[in-house]
Image (cartoon, rainbow, N blue to C red; front, side, top):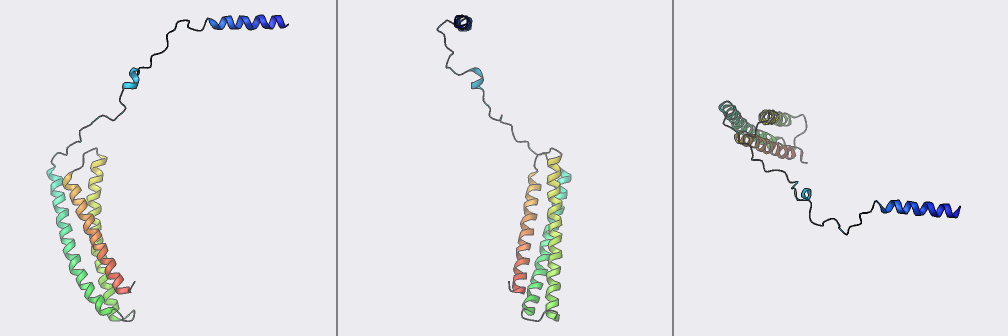
Length: 167
């Protein structure tokens, strides 16, 4: 049995030697062709927006609305500030207190107008992206202008409310 097992092991080793390359050649350590390929993203030129007269007209109209809303807000905020100055320290429900609350409500409504303009402009920019069109610089500028005006108005509202409530 030992002799048969030894013979079987010897036969297996002899069979395996046929799988080994007897030459002294080893694989090259030079980079393979696939290792020289770049995986970086290709440089793609940024698409340029073509002029759009209809969009330019719409942007100009929305910018005019922003200016009108900003002027109306500034007037109403000054009025609210005056009414709040009179109402500070009065009892809730008094005529001065109610007048200040009404003025705060009015500037909130005017701020809503500015927000609507900002949303309209933002929707136009989003739709351009959905349609696969490149960003339109004049539209991006108008979106930024509307957002900045909205933030400025919200800061003024917050300031007036803190002055009124004392918080």
